[in-house]
Image (cartoon, rainbow, N blue to C red; front, side, top):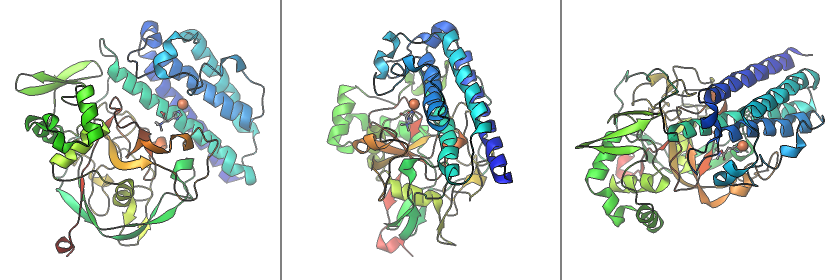
Length: 438
Ligand code: AVJ
Ligand code: FE
């Protein structure tokens, strides 16, 4: 065995273990009642996510990569996300808490066994090693979904974490991103999913990107100015949704005399005007940007602001460079249970001076989810391709609940434009006029 495959095995084992510890934290924090209950029709019971994570691991690693016998073929259908919408999942004959925990343990033991046995070199290195990385990312994505379920849960708080750091620098208003081609997507990032591939050149005209995300204070001014009462700021589809769903403020906000409070993971507190706004849907983000005289960035603009290095003309892996995320770069990984204020992560800024593109809140973009030129589905169409089209909008950058393993400059998330139970906020952009190009 070469040093390279040895390091790869170690890294995979460490990531699998670290990820399972997070899943355990999220599922052991609640009692069995809360584990099997549905906390919102938008979400699965936590016990479904738990066994689903194990079932995907069994399908992709134990059966596909390992060619081993099924552990529980009889439950495949229960944990196939395409068979049952989230709202129907509590009615299914799901594995109970003890069974589900035992099942994921059994699958994991087989996977660790496989990790030692499977030849991770040569031609199979790319596909098999990738399958392990994909499983880590899949579990981390469900962990973020479970964190969103925790946010919807009613009852005494069960999760605790230190507050995110305060601002260390003052962040400016907006930054000019020069026009011209840049490399979007990747063909070399080892754990990049199919929808991030391949690398391709996109010509992006000059534009201004806000150096920080929209704050609660700014968003409260939009509300106070009657933003939710004036169709002029909304698209026709957005306005229809705003009326039908009776939206009046971000999800989880409550009026508190002349200001606002929100409930976060079971604790009610005053809204912090300096923090990025979170729990807004695409339509609210779009309306806010219009009211502010700006717009949402396209996905290509977002990625150029995050990755393009004007000094070299290269695209970086992250805004700060090619180094994997460290704690001082970004608010990722559920180390904190809230987004950080602007200026809290100066080491994570892009060369142009755009802050906190990675972590804190997912940022809505103006773009529909679509395949890049040369897209090839992997491992199957159901991972990304079936979601391509105008029904889904792309979000970028990850949130405080996103793990570093499932976050990078090329990473793409997507959801319906009406969804806001996710940790979604926004950053504004605007066209650059000729007179501003200097
Ligand atoms: C990329 C977050 C939209 O949760 O539906 C989880 C990730 N795919 N299981 C989702 C995913 C299959 C996906 N998102
Ligand atoms: Fe899944």
